[in-house]
Image (cartoon, rainbow, N blue to C red):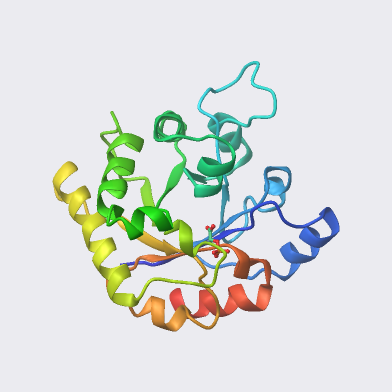
Length: 236
Ligand code: PGA
């Protein structure tokens, strides 16, 4: 299985900072960089892939502030993150809007990194599996071709906190996600990334979990040395 490292730069870097970052960034296959939309053009057509952090579901029109999958594709972007917990918690994305975005992204031939994950409260109430199943079923409603879908399992309580599940917990949850895909999509073996406080120190351990297909990295991806170390471990 070819593993993946995706870097979610979130809303970071000024123009001067991002220019320096691009210059220092080493390319490699199966490395996906997801910068803020205004910098996307600096990351396309390189020896790594470029993704957006979101993509609106209409192709064009009076949708002030939004950027569509059609527009992203026309720039040379080939991935988009959808359903990130920050979009869900801060900007009102629901499973229903994420579903529309997934359908539009696939129609426009983008690969989708679909983020799913439970809150701390849901975890404490033993609702993790129900939440993940609901997210998968509803975000992928009426989607029949899942070849271009990668799942990023990101427990929300782990994002940016430095707290991560045990390896056994990650393995069990990813097995569960894969089981859902197997039953919904005729034994399709979906790639599942782990995301949440991945860094250069814990990457060896996370990468050793047998069913992890790679990682989605936030904070640590802003530091060239750290993301290079992570890539070195996962993409070797
Ligand atoms: P983090 O973010 O690595 O900073 O926890 C991960 C993410 O939000 O994708």
